[in-house]
Length: 351
Image (cartoon, rainbow, N blue to C red):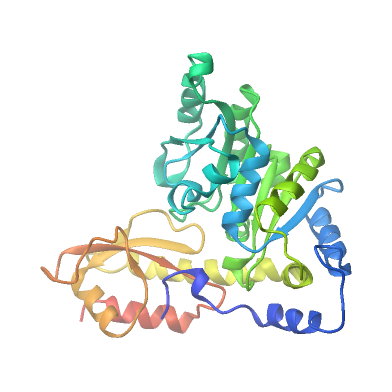
């Protein structure tokens, strides 16, 4: 019963088989291998973007930070939600890779930016000319850090605000597959057709061993990305092992199948928790992440049985009144089973 993170799960067997198959003979390094050529074609076809530039890196932090670096100057502002992943979990990497761009935080319920709040923040910025950071870019996390999902029209409403001010838009799609399954639209409809310029397309959280794609819909930014990736230490020499993962991930819709499994587990888990007395959801569970609360006694039983998940916020204790509610974050992965969910629900249910 491990709900600590989708990063905790094993890689899908199809991914490991692809890595083993790639581990034979010789292949040109640095992305010149034939597998990468096929991956590039796969992603261009999937996103209906025949001219898109496609690159692979090993971490989501690299994908996000390098994407931001090609979209804004060091004196630019990156407008994102207060709970965006690039704000909460990147240890200042976007600021570092951009050379100093400032994250400007936007409010909105359940970690989703409100378009009017975004418009107001952009309009309020750079009022004193050279004395201020300038308007740089917008970054959208989908699925969000609170487990919610922007649909294509919500993405378009945010990108429309960005366009009013001439700003490019990045999407942090570490859990893009989970968001897409929920939204029920095409990859193109969720991204460039809705106004997104650069996408960080996640694989690691959804069954890969370690690979993320950066899809740049405007190929004019491609060469700068290549230089920044190399300068930043994220150009893999044995690149075929990144490409092999991504090729298997995309083959026969595996990436969507894995996301559906994770989302199904989260839906089962959230429904079960919501039905318990004294329990409830903190945020809508729209992807593979569940934020919920239930009485301390249930937490105690789960922890004693070895269940792994995080209190959210962290500073809560198992010591105290047993009927008091404690809140938690639980993340389901492609490998979370119905049995895992049902066993956990049985533990936290009142005796």
